[in-house]
Length: 567
Image 1 (tube, rainbow, N blue to C red):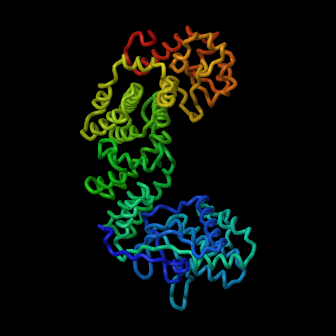
Image 2 (image 1 turned 120 degrees about the horizontal axis):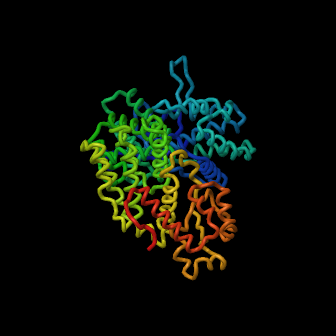
Image 3 (image 1 turned 60 degrees about the vertical axis):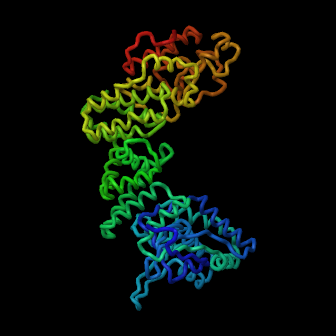
């Protein structure tokens, strides 16, 4: 294992030496893709120009960490975003100088043309270990800019880099000033390079960098760990595996639960082997699993399989269309999954659903999903701790690994439901809306609206909000309807309903009939139909509706209680 005591070379280099004709760089397969945004490019060119125009003696561009591969080739361990951006900047600068000599000088910094007499192939200053799909566009930029159509560039970071640098430089119409800037860039802009002399230490250095606080993500580190464990594979096979990783990472890049979907899918593997909530970082736990439980190749196969199930079962729900159940049940399954996916405050449940499906396919799937959702909802409602709410999820995984049957797994979920009096107490709470910042109230109302829906799938849900029928800040007219203790009823379940979007503040204190009509115009929910039949909203109507909603929830949850409303 590489340690900080290993011999490393560190030295300060001018940018002309970083991009000298006898140095070449390779971006390893385990590195993330080039992904800087417009703000990064703007900041880079603005900082460089400010340092130049203010007459500074030098400008420091930070450090880069390299592993020497041999023959003047270095693997970029840290710094690829900056080095790639600088290579594009050199390409763009060709547009702003007149002399061919200057254009050729800039080209040589980032590209060595083919020499037929000496039998030397063309070489780019920066190369990619994996032939990523955007590589051809990068090569065109380096070789041909400005003789390319920027609008045809598909890879957004490359396009944004060119546009950002060009937009900044086009206002600097003094050619001599551009030449002076290039000289400043070459001779007064520095980087500190840290080089390992051992070719096989790249991955270990990568880990050391992370432990010292450089911003490498869990996914980056796991990718590097997997790559390092593919040591029995030839380079072609290793690159194929990494290309597959790149594809999955790109296809599941959407953010969900403050992480990418790809990280979410990796966490399913963690959940399966650890059978418990995370105790360390995702990287540390996956590293342990890879060292003790599963080979890198099997990890990648499992990752691909889980990605397919996640996409078909959770993300786009297409797998459910093939279930051998009636259409009404299919709609119910989809609504339960959407409800959990979009409104439950954790993603851990997905692993239980996917591993149940992986083992039993559609057999008793609806029954399992009903029992899991009921358990999760009731534990949330009765304010079990986040750790307690995770326990049934990991119990499902443990039971699956113990080869328990579908029925046994479902019965285990049904066994330890909260007491009905506790459920009743929490549904009747005066602060129901305020719990979990309104998230529990919205989930509950959507559950009432869609749990038994057999025709309409829950969709266009992002704008759905919770509205107070009796206003939170009532006028004197409204206060008179509920008496001096009106505040104890405002946030209770019976006073809440769904609305598509937000009700205009001017409508909140409008007369009841006018307010309900406005809510109906936005979107017609079943929950609101009964409100249309009420002449006025008063304490008596509130109490009747509250009791109806609580009783309906008990029916949906299949809890056998008698009187469940206010007493």
